[in-house]
Image (cartoon, rainbow, N blue to C red; front, side, top):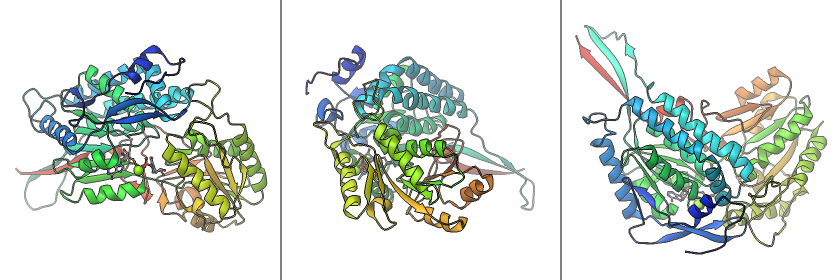
Length: 504
Ligand code: NAI
Ligand code: MG
């Protein structure tokens, strides 16, 4: 285990947790990987190893899946066990977990900042509270998942109704951009609906999820109901996605891996939901409130360092206001204070990993080589850590790689449009393999709502971007995914429907 001095600004409890011995949660116990192998966790502000966590492999995944299977089929989470946990108790467990997270909010925020690099000030007001809120929202659903009755017309006298039942054992694989929040998005609805879970955390950011595992134990979830693994994608994610005793796999991450998940799921045709990449347009019309549009479209791309699947990475601006908007967004980009996530002055931390640093700076280089111009940012080397300055690329054209591909960093491509034809603007906005989100900036409600209907994506924001709520469904059209997260909608993705008919 590497022993680097952790930042003195951290609370001692957080430092102790980070430098402590890390274990995965399998069948109600904290365990090492069967092989004894570990993987390193880096501090993205320094590039130094700050912790080691177990490196789960196929055997560990199998152990976790069998525990989840037992808890679902026989254990207290089963619908039929004599000592079964009721829907109301499931709700209370989720609420208890939310309360514990609230008690440890600051610690969870510090872990998130250390692990992902995001500013502590952001983790404190966004990541952790949103995760808590999601658990509370889903806790409420536990007792409200119901079927229907049907007046059927088949000759005779029948009573027909539907039951909405849990799917069974759910495998969940999450990324590193919002580690705790993604865990909540996955665990909350799966558990509220009565499934059992094996969750694999992202190898870059396992710390808040491992702390969450401790809180899950403290809340009193029965053993085997929630299993939390750390490991690499190929080593631990792939065997989870292909496991025959897993009934459903829910994945968030790259579109490339999403396609591998679909293939891995074919063995037993497990259900699949996917929340994948995006290349979301932010479209500014000339009548928009430009101060708000400039601040809003800047935040659309720079929030969380652009490491958001719904980041507004294509800035489309009407030519009449293009110069003004690009200048405004570039000014904001230049003014963003980039630094360590723990520094209270920091507005943007480092990217999550060296891999992402190389990927994002590679895209900036590619854009410049293809003829784009940086009006803010560009490639700037820090002596250590994975810092990339907020970058605005202009003179980009629809064929460029930076315009077509997801960069997943603080890089926006600005393009003017000249048209007044809503359909043509929408066609340009839709010119992407992705369809996750979009924002439209205008004071004209007719244009705003016409655009909202024409854009092919799971979310359209009008005069805002990145507004999330546990009650609102989120997910993608096209190659941005299958199914929805959050809201009542996600419960459809974690339940099966059974039609029961009785001849009376
Ligand atoms: P990734 O898709 O490789 O990783 C996401 C999760 O999938 C991690 O837990 C990883 O361990 C797991 N995984 C990787 N390969 C797997 C496999 N063969 N089978 C099962 N699980 C597997 O994403 P990565 O490499 O971290 O980032 C690459 C790019 O993906 C980013 O630059 C970004 O464009 C995109 N991405 C999109 C996210 C989103 O929220 N939609 C989140 C993270 C990344
Ligand atoms: Mg990957």
